[in-house]
Image (cartoon, rainbow, N blue to C red; front, side):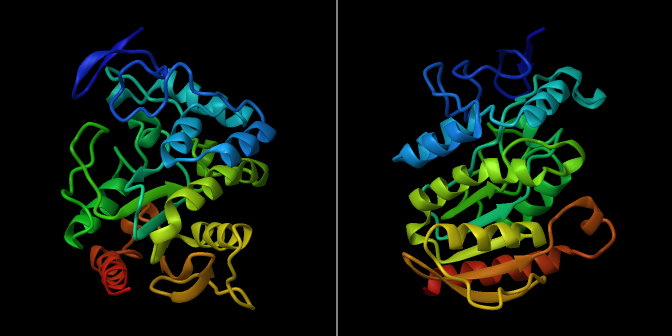
Length: 278
């Protein structure tokens, strides 16, 4: 059954088909679909623009378990969103294609980005993140309810290590590896002016370090350890980059006070200052 988008109306299936008018959908009916890890590697390596990467990510079907989970979730829905269509596809990167700050997260939430089609949008983690970006001058507004809400980022790009919502918020090592070529391609095409990478959580920290190594950079020995507020310099083919650690804005962290608004503002305030001064 088709349902209207909560902001623009129209009628959409759950999952949303490519090229059907969903706001922010980078894909068309002609976008090549990666059905295997080998096809992910081939298509990611062949991409020449960030838009091509976004389109390929948004229709990827290389991980059968994740495809099944995200689509079942889109069909079943949460009761509070029963009258809305669910995106039900991988969430591509969001923001500038020439960023000075790149934010790396873990994976889309089942009823957040998997519903709205935009990373960190439609759940409390996203609210916490984008409110901080707005206070730090890195976003034009704090509101992040859906993919047509007018949110714009200022020289910032947000990406996820794994692009599909995983069961239990826990992708397998194989699924993480399958998705890595998309991240590498995104870094290759958008990372040339990045001055700061902010890793949201220990897993994202490891992903960022691995991405830097795979794409010809170096991170030093021993590898730097994650911690909130930790700042280390890494080397990339494009020059030096600062890697900042920040606790992930999950409810487990924000509801318990492990991560406060002030703590996140400190990280993004530092990121903004470093990006401007570089």
